[in-house]
Image 1 (cartoon, helix red, strand yellow):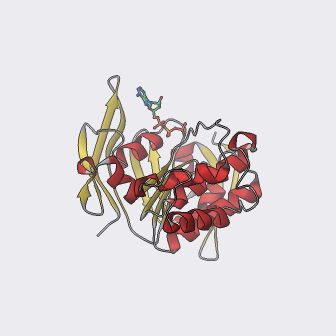
Image 2 (spheres, rainbow, N blue to C red):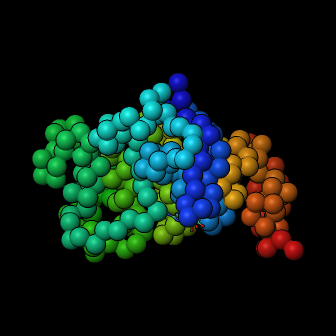
Length: 258
Ligand SMILES: Nc1ncnc2c1ncn2[C@@H]1O[C@H](COP(=O)(O)OP(=O)(O)OP(=O)(O)O)[C@@H](O)[C@H]1O
């Protein structure tokens, strides 16, 4: 059974279709990256897929169960979500922010079971935040805070992890580290879906790419199957060279397509 299955999701706002007839499945063990130009409907599709928006048509199954029938707590035990905007300016210690990831198990900051504390410790180690535990979150750099948010999502230890542009604020080294963390989370047996804009990162780490344009899924497959110069021109309007490299591809973007 798929961890997540969407069937024919369609959603309009203000009379404009934002997502049309979007169907895909996520399997455990796969890092899927959702790519597409600004405004193509990626965040809207993630929110529909998590049951945070009600579609005009179509349905979502998480572990075979209709998402709209799950309580918010039950859903939070199945899926962790790292949204694109992550407001957090409270002077709360990093460890407590990460512990918020355990709320679906009844945890509250300062009241963690041994299991909750172990999950928080694993997330801190995975995101290389040892030494930051007692720091107030509002004193962190943008990149450090991004890793705290990721740790909060990882601490939930859900079968499904969904993230919207998790590497946007990170320097190149941490972009790769975070992409590796997502790959590791997937290869340990989760289904991971993340939006990225950096196509080189996508080509390097994704097991699978879902391509969106104008609210529609226009391609879905491995990097080798879907990353092609013609598709990059058509979907992103860029002129790029794609060469086979090892089991994947290497990508050089020359600039906007003429
Ligand atoms: N509630 C809404 N009402 C009207 N338009 C909306 C609403 N929500 C989103 N949109 C529009 O829908 C389109 C898709 O938005 P969405 O955030 O899903 O795109 P995206 O692919 O995630 O973009 P980006 O890469 O810029 O984050 C955009 O043009 C956006 O302005």
